[in-house]
Image (cartoon, rainbow, N blue to C red):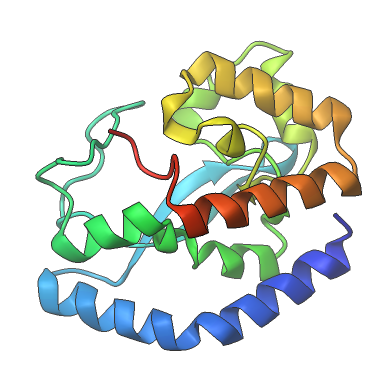
Length: 187
């Protein structure tokens, strides 16, 4: 997707979702101690690290548990507001700020943490040939239900096949998954 379209989508979405962000911020603060935003180092384009923003969904001090630790639907570390935010994927809305800053795109491989990238093969590093995305090919293929190695392979396939038409297909599928609630949170 062209960068100008990413910027337009991110800006329009942030403005449209600003009342939601305010309500989410209030719910997060009322429900638990700590900041509204969760910040985490992730690896992006050409292997450069950046600080990815999300709405905080876990109790303060819950992270890091370990590389690849799956957060299940009944994880006691997840706050009440966090359960809703995760189930709807609304915790990802602050990623739009990362798009505006040029660190992410709307569509691309999800950015991973540096500890995971350290074990990548040269082929798996191909994920870093494009900006990481808020949504991507691996996410619309089953998200957390897809094993890690297969997710990386799906991301490499995306890098090799990427086009505006594929990005539009991924974006349409993402919208459907968010509206329908299918495959958005691990069981």
